[in-house]
Image 1 (cartoon, one colour):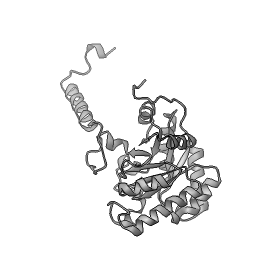
Image 2 (cartoon, rainbow, N blue to C red; image 1 turned 135 degrees about the horizontal axis):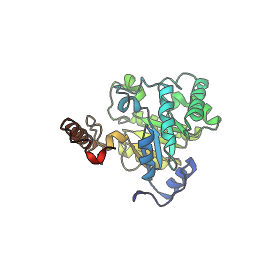
Image 3 (cartoon, one colour; image 1 turned 120 degrees about the vertical axis):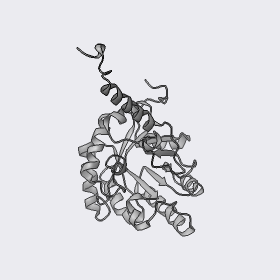
Image 4 (cartoon, rainbow, N blue to C red; image 1 turned 45 degrees about the horizontal axis):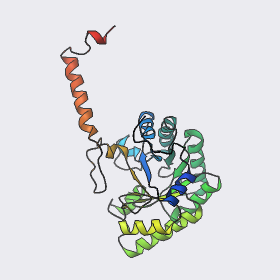
Amino acid sequence: MSTYTVEDPRKVTTRRLAEMKAKGEKIAMLTAYDYSMARLVDAAGMDVILVGDSASNVMAGNTTTLPITLDEMIGYAKSVTKGTTRALVVCDMPFGSYQGNPLEALGSAIRIMKESGAEAVKLEGGEEIIESVRRIISAGIPVMGHLGLTPQSINKFGTYAVRAREEAEALKLISDAKMLEEAGCFAIVLEKIPASLAERVSKELTIPTIGIGAGAGCDGQVLVLQDMLGINKGFSPKFLRRYADLATVIEDAIGNYITDVKSSDFPNESEQY
């Protein structure tokens, strides 16, 4: 058992997250996309596991999150839920599965819940997608919002730069956050916005905020697993803290294996029947 496991072993639910915010207890969230990694993340005591559409980048090798499909997201989420017992599992709804039609959004969310076993869904956007959010929540499906930098809208913004620096965009973000809370969202991810704005939003909302590149004033934090483990060496934004250099560890291990095979050192007598 990991020595990092939190004191409270209870299953994390949306209600537990609300309790954590009320007590001032920070919420830890990481992404995962497969069974083996989900087991490790969950065993360490993670509060929330996000099956992110970042799988499009780190698992499928796409340059944006746009190509990943609903079927693919369901597949990743299904693997993650099999490896999770404590953490709340949230699945991203991919681009095109909810933006245009609230009924289509509901159908997509129902498929995720029924076929993957995930316990909540996450949508990007505010006022523009609020009817989809309301429709999904009306069916009893928990929704996590996502404001600030919304990667599914990269072609609209044309850049991954910090959002909401200007007053008009900041005021819209605050309005959108309150609208999502009123619609019934249980939490909101705030991505790549000024820390002062994220802190203000976090204080004005009763639901938790989860930051990524949004400063320490949020109620919790999220990172992409492959980024914080140092598997993805090509991504180094200011907000990323690397907790390991697994790319080097893995490359060395594989290199040693190749050397041992080619030199006939592996397998040795104790490694055969």
